Picture 1: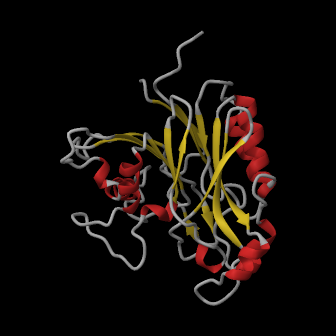
Picture 2: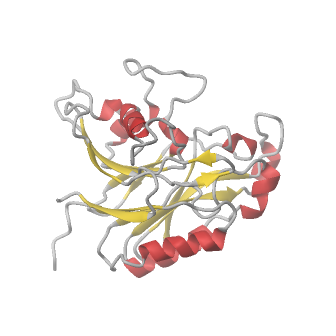
Length: 297
């Protein structure tokens, strides 16, 4: 019997979803994943609200694209892909709330919430493993979504082990806090330290910074992501320094005049290591591709 792998292999799928074109977006994702051989990766990541698109203007506009947990289009896609490739698959989608949740909650503007910005995780047997709802909502989410109640961690088989999950704005400071590099707060990074997270996965629809547009990568955004995880690479008073692989799966393209940053990335962060050299790989702003990261290489 072969020994279990110690180093995870992670595939990051980045492309430019078209708003409201669910089937076309799924076809694009299938095309990109076609070249992944079965059992060649341990985890496949797809971005926030990958098949519906992200920049919906209101609850009424997004309502036709809300999906039922475990049975909706994204769940079926993840179940099929994970079963075929014998790996874990995680993807973001707009979840339809249960009627009792709709009745009990309003948005900040007093309108009825209709969904949640969610992620689904499926295992190598094609079975549902767990879910997560975005905790720190962005302005666009607040027109329709119910926030989650906290970050999520899953204890998976080696080589993935302890995997924590966040969605986009979760990386930012929770309102009403502002933050500084010295004092934080660093809610997500501190959570990962508490959970002894081996892999942090971020599913994003992060906006392009607009800075250095001549550069193929959004360098400002890459630096910001790293800075918001400062406790994971800063010196620690603990004698046991934690080691965290950070996977940021972002989308690219444009929706309703909004441009997304692409630049999906893998960081290897170790307490006390410092920021220099933590970025291990990154896709470009405009890439529509699958990047496979093997941490043993």
